[in-house]
Each structure stands twice: as structure tokens, then as C-alpha cells.
Image (tube, rainbow, N blue to C red; front, side, top):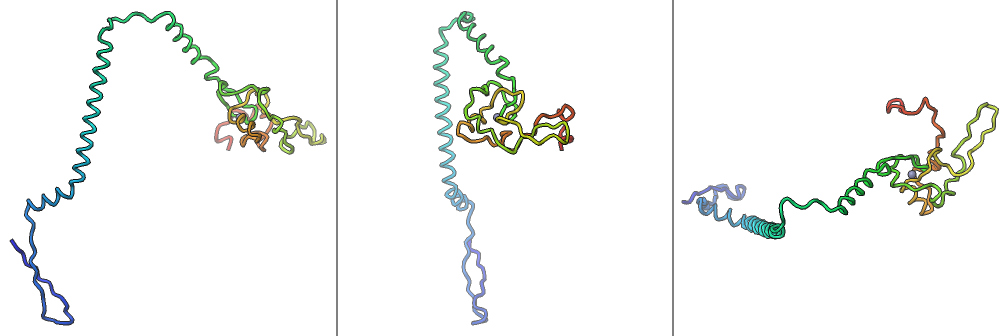
Length: 203
Ligand SMILES: [Zn+2]
């Protein structure tokens, strides 16, 4: 079936000229064919995915079969674990739940709370001398007439005897750690009244 559409052209040049072109309305079958051709690539991709899926199912089936064959001759109930295995299980449990695995301590260099298993003892750390920085600390004065003096030695958090891995890594590279107290972050002993403040109080 042909539908004719009227199209006026060149109105300024020839006022009365017009052209008529046939417009072919596509049938349902033709429309479907065009649609199918357009979506052929999508179909191919979908089919590929289905093939991959079936390959996976096949390999899974083979694995299950292999597992079943390997367990086929085993008796039920299985024998109790050997003394050696029991010993290993208990030893591993003790190691994983020992206080060292979850206890935390403050880092002597930066003051950050860190699990003790990830820290090293202070005497074992190299380049501690880098933490001797002038103009960061100040000795407590009991009278205003007392002279202003700095603390001697490397700037470390008092009461801390271990160093965290981040600080060790930085000191090994001969650099002062970014968050080290010696990097201008030293505030000295905190009075009891100012310890354990809430966030709002800290602000
Ligand atoms: Zn640290």
C-alpha cells in the first residue's frame, strides 16, 4: 500500500510547483526483519554469554564429581583429629588470641595508639637522634621568674617505650615522621583535668 505525501518546494521561485513522492509504509514482517538485523549483535553477545555459562556449569559438575569420587571411600563418621593436629589448633588459637594481638600502646614518636604486635622497642629503632629539634618543647616553670628552658634529648612521648611501624619506616629513611611530636606537635604532659575530654570539650 502506498501513501502519498505532498511536499511543497521552492515557494519563492515557483509558487505553484510541488512534488509528490510515494511513502511506503513498512509491514509488520518488514519492521520485525529490520529490528532483528539491528539487534543481531546483541543476540550474538547473549548467545556467547549463555555458552560461557554452560561451560561454567560443566566444569562445576566435573569438580563436584571429582570431589564426590575422592570422598566416596571415606568412612562416616570420620576418625577424631590426631594429637598433633589438636596441638596445632590449640597453639594457633593461643597465638591469635594472645594479648599482644589486640593490646594497644602509645607510640613514643607520634603518640598514636597502635597494636603492640606492630611496634618495636624504642632502643631498637635507628635515627632517634633526628628527633632532637630546637624550639618545640618547653620545661615547666613553677614561678614566672624561672627562666624559659627547653627539654633535652629527643622529643618523645613520656611513658611510651615502643614505636609504631609508620614512624620506624620514616626514621629508616632518615626523615622526621610527619606526625612526630618533634614536628611541632609536642604539647607536654596533659593535666588530669584535661584528659578524657569529650569532642565538644576538645573544640
Ligand atoms: Zn608513631
